[in-house]
Length: 127
Image (cartoon, one colour):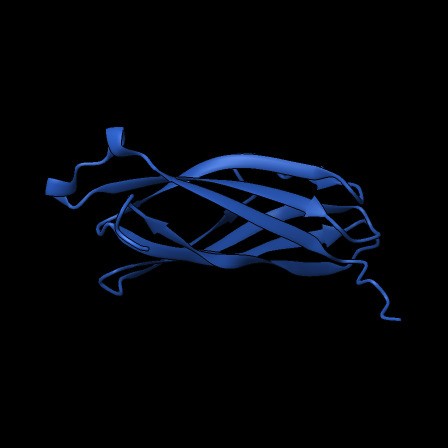
């Protein structure tokens, strides 16, 4: 039987194209994404920082680093969820995002929670 990793954060993503803020004729495509974090480990942990890698369809890569998410550094007990919505602006109608959240467990262990790479796409662009 495999032991459960005490430092496990599950990351789920939902995306949405924000047409009312986008201007395709100016190569401005706005996307919203909602992230749900769940502490699946056995130790409480706090999200300290984020590191995003954002790539557009032209291959342009932007890295974004910063403290917390949406101005917060949530602390989660095992089983707790934290959800937030943020956004990204691309120069192309399709792109991808992925990265890591830097976490600090209550026992002093620092670990990264992987943000699985996800696609940002205007409707009816990808099948």
